[in-house]
Image (cartoon, rainbow, N blue to C red; front, side, top):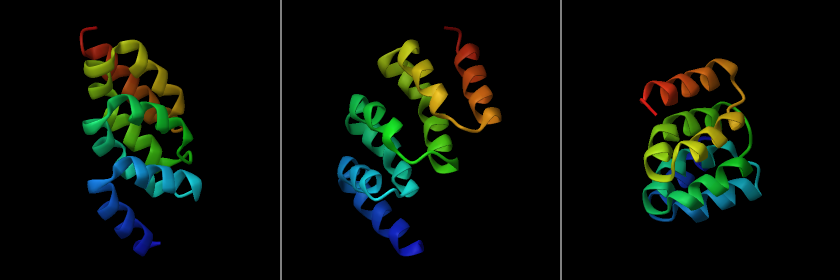
Length: 104
């Protein structure tokens, strides 16, 4: 619901790990919206929590948007390890192409 999204976005700004964990515990895909914020504070925690988020469009886009940063911060192998989590084949291919296009 819109209220849950508003609360998670607000909470995710200051406590992204807790917001994501709550979303995971309650099966709420909106938690993926806090993934980039968590990555800023704790890249490894963001990567570790990503697989636990409910699969779907929200998680797909969150991971797609993080792939480049993950590669820069944690390495290409870690970034490639996230690709299977993207359920949308077209988005997964786009993320793969972005990794290949980065010159690595």
